[in-house]
Length: 219
Image 1 (cartoon, rainbow, N blue to C red):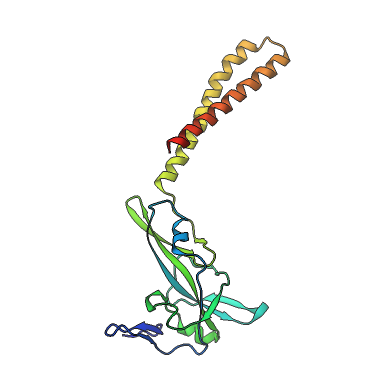
Image 2: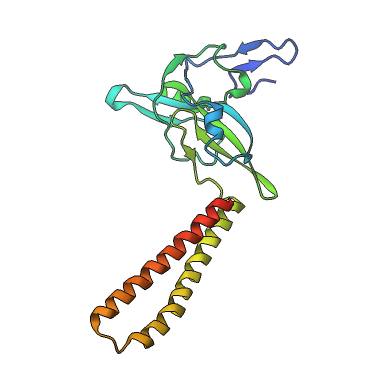
């Protein structure tokens, strides 16, 4: 079964690669600039369950300063709306550069209507292990840019909660500490007031810094 959007297929019987009805202008394929290992390092250890490189079709029209690139996927992809990938090192497409299952089908109507050249751009499809579910996102294979907002992990959310709690505890401790100082020193002259308040601020800052260091060592 060959769909109209397919042009590069693998035979299910003999495993041969087949190019069917290729576009008039020979497509180009952009070479990935970043490795799978580099992409995995963008996320916390153990967070990535799988990565897979895919080549997405973009239609190039015009030349030099008038050059335009637009997506021509046969089906829309969430997260790529309005995203234009950067330029990269390109090769004229042939069947040795990628496997059929790595190629995202293109929309023939768009390609024939605008009469441009298809450029297949690499993206890594990254599957992430989250709390109770998995989520996929894309990483640009040339710029290594994460497409969209990466999900917040439970550890990151917990870290933010702890930081907020630390702020309010330090603020409360400061208020408890400063009220007695105020009543005990209100009859002293201005120079003594300034010195005591400076010492109090330094003590509070030291307390906060020490607490954060202890938390960092425990992690």
